[in-house]
Image (cartoon, rainbow, N blue to C red; front, side, top):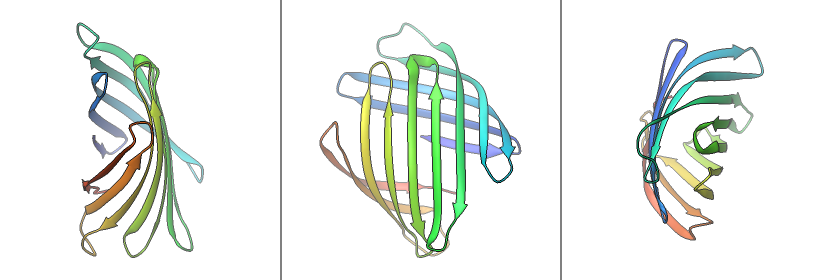
Length: 150
């Protein structure tokens, strides 16, 4: 997954593989800030998978909220894409020392997964994190690196 924001525009790309195939997507959204509530992002999307002949046009909506807390922060994200009824939800809780926990769930017409992950920032100021967790539907442990510059 790759995502970036420039001004009031957000851009994203993703590629996923799973037991029954693969899928890829792109989106461009316009951000609308609802003060003290959330940021809503709405825009077009393109999707493709191993069971389609080409790219399909869809629409995407994302609702996000970042909240500083006494212990660090809380980040919530919910996403829906009309392409294959794709959805994703994330709840992330972290502290100031660079440790965070993610709870995620997602699915579509061809895919379903829930996971829990622990992330640890590798240096005090940098964007690189060590990430480890468990995917429940796939019954797989994963370990990797992530880069988050937000």
